[in-house]
Image (tube, rainbow, N blue to C red; front, side):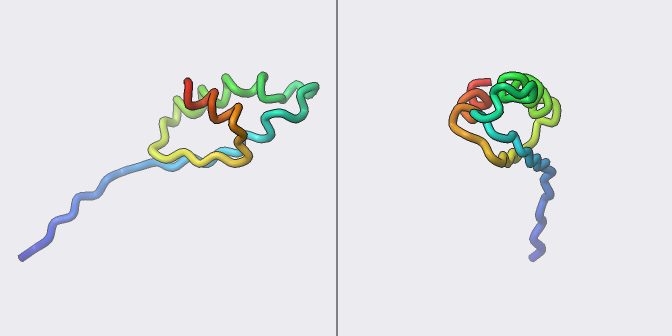
Length: 65
């Protein structure tokens, strides 16, 4: 008896979103980056998304959008 396995494709994205509540005076702060990051995630549409340095504020924004 032969066993037939079907393959599935998936994509993985890992992103370091940096500190969400530091460097607020820096032009590269979370408020300045969040829409760009959301755009990148939506464009790539990964099956699995791994985030580094994410804090609850950032996760809430990404989950809501």
